[in-house]
Length: 222
Image (cartoon, rainbow, N blue to C red; front, side, top):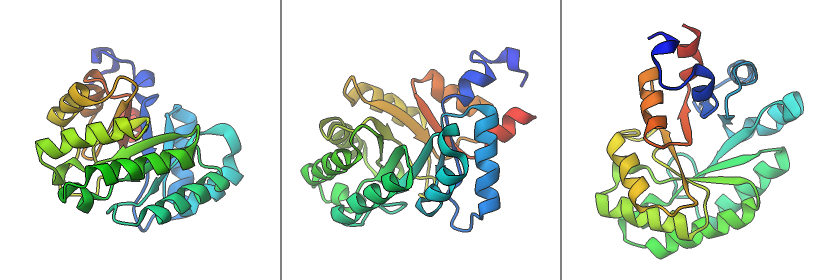
């Protein structure tokens, strides 16, 4: 699709992309390429494994925004471990945190416990952006609505659909559900299965302030 056929410019869309490389076998060369692309194309951030945060910060300084993941991808680490991950990531130079909720707690209906964990992690983040991954593919509609409340009440900055490692990714229906039930200060990040420029534009049109994908820059080069 030609750029002029889009409602948004390529630059506008890339400015909302968390340029992502979270594969277990990602090498420094993969991460370096990701960072160079993020700088060249002005993506919102790079989203990377925690073990690469310090090297990225030492190599690129403030030339890009570094996002990393906590409790990833299954979410069932204890809260203290997740808080420790956040604290280490910030020491290493991370700017933003994407955490995974304890999905078992959600399925058990322990929504207040999930909210308390989000609040504890946001406290550890301080002024740094916290995005909360609820992994929609495993949840019922009622559970998703409960997570909208938990994310809002817990003080997080974003609700995020998916890790990209579950059985499904972002959907239009889930983003629309989020918009109906999150608080006014909470933003939306779509992730998982965003593989075309049409996908990217659709999620932005639906109101997503961030979109997590590894493919956007490559698509825009075509």
